[in-house]
Amino acid sequence: MLPFLLLGTRDEDAAADNEYDAFLAFTGLPASLLHRVRLERRALGAVDLDDYSGILLGGGPFNASDPEATKSPVQRRVEAELRLLLDEVVARDVPFLGACYGIGVLGTHQGATVDRTYAEPIGRVPVTLTPEGRDDPLLADLPDRFEAFVGHKEAVRDLPPHAVRLAWSPACPVQAFRVGRNVYATQFHPELDIHGLCTRIEVYKHSGYFEPHEAEALKAMARAGHVLDPPKICSRFVQRYARAGATSAG
Image (cartoon, rainbow, N blue to C red; front, side):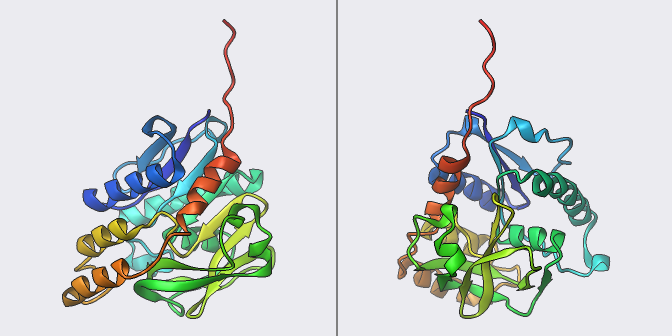
């Protein structure tokens, strides 16, 4: 089977490693079939999409809607590399799943309005599938309404006409969308379980998502919920898009 490629942008090792471990756990992939590139540390370089079954883009500290003048050189490099990658991904309709930061990157690339209108604090939210979401093969294992973990400073405010809205929450009208048949992004985190969220709460305690003294209450909130359905998207993505590599002649 051809591997999948996970692109990360988290500078903190604890959060980056937790994200990688979560994608491994919920996709069911062994480490040999989930290649990771930490974009905050090195340039992406050339990617031959034919070498991969699909692409995953995790969350991170960047915001696609940040004013250009405030972006660090690393953020500008990362976003330039992702734009070039998405040019080919979208043109070829290559399987892609972006989570949280990924929805801002894909949304911006596709002409969506991405800003801070519908930011959501760290928490559990009820996510509802649209009629198109209920018919979407990637979301087929999800109930019409489910709990998910969120925490984001920006969100898609308006989608372009060619994008298909798949899910929403009361405070955020675009929780998931699709471009073409195989290019997806979610605002909520499909890779997050309770342990993962608690890890990120600790890592990002001083990053402006919440007041530091709220950390323990947020962890208790996470433990009190029933966030079980979003990780099904990760396993479904692999089940749907895993493909065999070319075999060499013996």
